[in-house]
Image 1 (cartoon, rainbow, N blue to C red):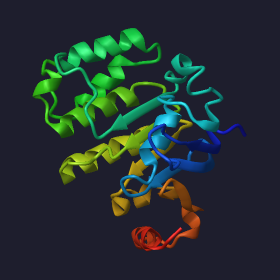
Image 2 (cartoon, rainbow, N blue to C red; image 1 turned 60 degrees about the horizontal axis):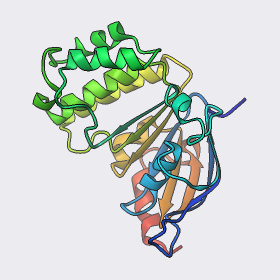
Image 3 (cartoon, rainbow, N blue to C red; image 1 turned 90 degrees about the horizontal axis):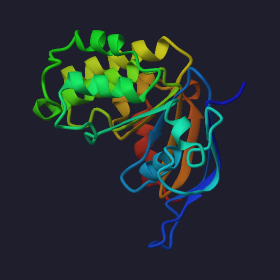
Image 4 (spheres, one colour; image 1 turned 180 degrees about the vertical axis):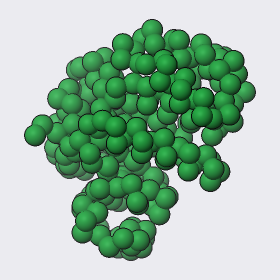
Length: 236
């Protein structure tokens, strides 16, 4: 089976730093796997995500659905989606305009499916992105992802700052979408207890290095948060 995500001996050192931001990271993800990428601020999560997205150069080998993140970036973005805690949607557009725009640039985007997802929320298609709350913006972004035949989805603190209702709705839609296709997920978060039940695997970073890489089958239910805290206290 060919991995949807293949990462082999990946490192990154910024020119203004004497230390590596990430050091010798390796893992593979197949369809059906959900990886929890855990670590405090500065652990290397964002650097690794940016490497996966082709946002900066790195040492080592990365393939997303067989594609190189930098050399085959345009084709890669047909298979990869990314949702962060920072709104990247064009605020001047209405929701309806955004869906129409997305259908024009993404060949696999299903505008009817996106509209159907949003019909189960309080979001009006005529509303501008700027007028939406943070929780609503996240829902719009997720609706776009759900309506796109994406193989790999990376979530970077997607529910940061959202209230419990929006968090529950977000994860319900996410789970339904994930189970409907051959996909894999990477969820970067420090809200360990919130995502534990979703994970099949976990990778914990500290100072750019992997300090724990394990299948959730080997971690007793409800103990991941405690394990995370313990590993952060230990020296590497």
